[in-house]
Amino acid sequence: MSAIYKPDEIKLLTAVLDRACLETGAHNRMDRAVLAMRILYAAGKGERDPERLLALTIAA
Image (cartoon, rainbow, N blue to C red; front, side, top):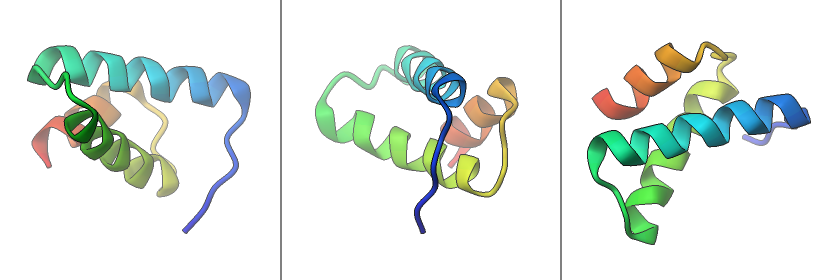
């Protein structure tokens, strides 16, 4: 599944990824990639609330 994101959405998703990495201690590429995939999965289903995206990303 692919999606097209607007610049403001990319900023939001990037901010969520940065925060998720801080909260989980993910520093290597593989860990960041896994978190990014979780965020994109939730965003692909329409989620845009940053707190909800963060919670879904960390809980998965």
